[in-house]
Image (cartoon, rainbow, N blue to C red; front, side, top):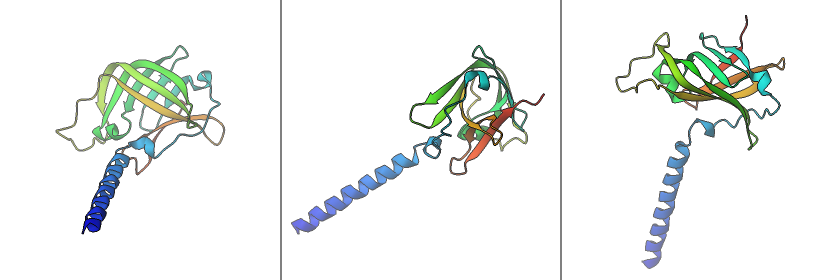
Amino acid sequence: MAGGSRLRAWGAALGGLMVMLAVLTACAGPNQYYEGTGLHDATAAEVAGGWENVAGTRVVLHKDGTALVEKLDGKGFDFEDGWRLSGTGTWQLADDDGGGGQVVRLALTDRTRVEKRSPAPAADPLAPEPPSTYSWFFYVDRDPHDGLVLFFLYGDPDIGNMYVMTRETG
């Protein structure tokens, strides 16, 4: 009987370890699914300028490291809350030493306006108030014509939705 008890104890310990590993990997966040573009040759001068997307978002990254943000949605699961932030802040181009590639870190430091995305998502009475400051990081990639594209992931990371910003056109 002692051998059977020992076997059950090992089985219980192994089962507990498997459950703990499953919980830890399930909570790893959206970055567990995406490791970056691998791009390392963009310059800050190349990133500076106006960016837009089809939803009416506009971001201007000034050469001095300041930024203007208009109607920028939240990243990750914050996108589901439906708010869009406008204001001023700072930005910097950073390179991931782990090989993932370059990112633009954008920080909204002075919010001037909050809007709801249209069509507005279903109102959640438990949704938090839109933040007064916020930070995004955009992956940096190149399009087929060697121009830069900035993007972040939003919503459920299993789906892989990309919020894409392209150079302003006029």
